[in-house]
Image 1 (cartoon, rainbow, N blue to C red):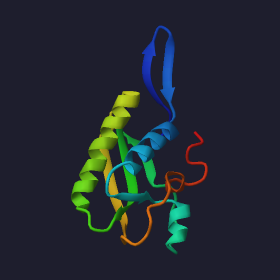
Image 2: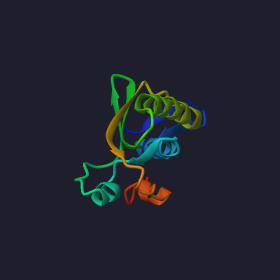
Image 3: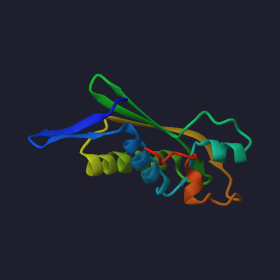
Image 4: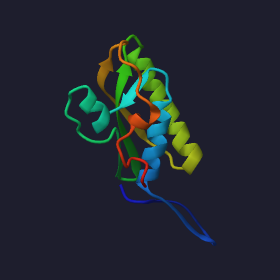
Length: 133
């Protein structure tokens, strides 16, 4: 996805980089009850799994903005309900912060984490450099 122009006015353009949207989406997702972590190298390595990259991907197709979010959820939660909460909260957060409308929010549950594991710290939810836009 390339930079998105939000407003064009007599003062000039306001352009928002996709990385900004990724950060908004990542933080919003991490705060939802039932979300254990986003898929990232640090967390996957701690589970002994090979990481396939970041937990948030944004693409633009024919004037549609599509978001794919890869998450680990906590054991014992209602998976469809948490996924619906992620979709709703992400759409609202991005639109409120940027006035960009997301058409689709696809949730990919890549794992369920047992209750025994402590929830990672907020800093560990994201790969190193995730917040460097």
